[in-house]
Length: 213
Image (tube, rainbow, N blue to C red; front, side, top):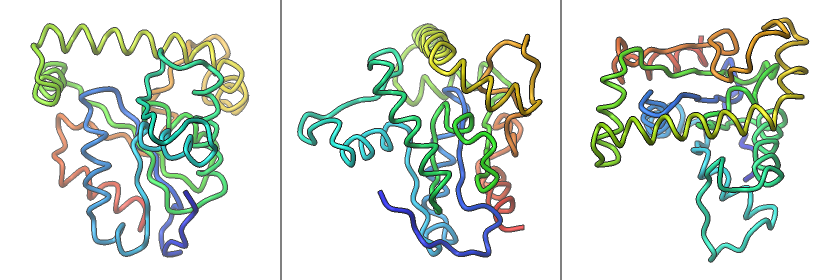
């Protein structure tokens, strides 16, 4: 996974896309990867799971034929932390990366070369419907799975990244020391898109405009 020599006309060298399930973050990643500007300029897009597999293979953390699936509550803290810090390293030192994951925006804090996009969906029913259609589950199962993943991941990450939260967020004045750790606070991001009120093409245009204007 080597850095690309992307078009220097871009305002930002990298993009992160963060959002909870049903927010449309994966859809945005896939649309960006197909966009002519992104393809022509040599950008490379990864979901969190894709990045984890590629990074782990690059660093020899697991055998290619074993196969892995990233889940915050499944792997040991040190493995997840190494992969997450790998994301920050790529964003800090490289160009042309588009990383879509729950934590990618937090991991890019204070990296001025990286556009941090937060995807939200303000209408819960729409968010649930997207998960139902994507995963072929019942609405009740979608809600239960979404809530379980959120609380498990948040609890683990709050423990793992308490120090970084203090250094990257509290000390830089973005929040008070007494504020709870919330990796998806809007003020940690450069662009916030509500996909309930913004369609896919409008969302794509917002991001393309942000890196070119």
